[in-house]
Amino acid sequence: MNIQFVDLRKQYEPLKKEILSGIEKVLDGMHLFLGENVQQLEVEFAEFCGAAYGIGISDGTDALNIILRAMDIGPGDEVITVSHTFIASAEAILLTGAKPVFVDIDPATYLMDVSQIEAKITSKTKAILPVHLYGQTVDMDPLLEIASRHNLRVIEDACQAHGAEYKGRKAGTLGDAAAFSFYYSKNLGAYGEGGFISTNNAELAATMRKVRDHGSGIRYHHDLVGVNGRLDEIQAVILRAKLPHLATWNEKRREHARLYRKLLMSTPSILPTERAGSIPVYHLYVIGVPKRDELQAFLKDRGIFTGIHYPIPVHLQKATEFLGYKKGDFPVTEYAVSQILSLPMYAELTDDEIKYVADSISTFFKNNN
Image (cartoon, rainbow, N blue to C red):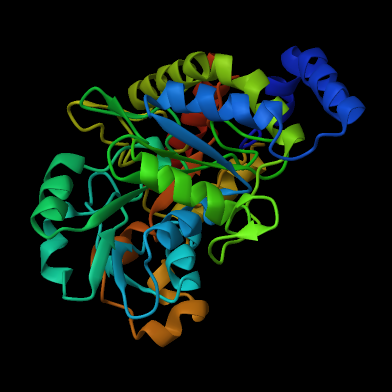
């Protein structure tokens, strides 16, 4: 059996005619940026999230950066976030000239340990940037209470959390603004790059629209220094074709997660923890295992492809050496990255494929006591 980590073709084939027809219409009209499809996607995905405003962006990193810029966060400012994430979370902060200040993660969820935030707040702190990693939401109520007491902005990195819920509210509506990625492998993915910003703040939304288009609200009139962060029409067509299926795909992922849990309970694996009141969307199904590298090689030999998200924490990357962090600063994060393994997870997986993955993991541990 051969099981890809992500199999995009299985998702594409049923939607092929609709997607190709939509792309053809865009090319016939040659209105390639900020046209009808981007405008409709902005309404449709904002409604999906339960947000008042949506803004189509070129990618998730730009979405984060544009939010920060619109909030006037820049040199001399600090933003509290986590090191256990894709580097874009910190990179977007650094690109404004601000400094990312890291806290460690909860060992059960691999998400921001909210109890550590307050100790990191200084006179320079302007925002908190929680990362809803793997399709799970950060514990937002205590985080929002801290932010309110200290008059801090809250920017959700929801790039892996399309449709995830926290106490009845979806990711993308919990803070002042949220960034989503439509990178091709996401729960809602483009065929290339794409991103999105959601917010309930009308003034902030207006500013972010300008920032994404060179600081312009009217062509050739530039009110501020912005970026070229526009989502294109072709990607918007693809995303609009997929969006009506997203809730169903997310539920299939949850079903797969339940089957993985049932089948892996008797192994030494540390399985994902679902916090009460949260509904995850399992962008990734991440387990913690001893002998991770050996297990990954064993699974590959059996035709099972896996991933590691992420093997090197941001605070230990060469690119961030100048921040002055060192090994040992975030022990939970550093231990987690030596153990984590992402198993195949996409809506089109079959029960037989999941059983084969689980049986292979069980076999490995039986042979490696």
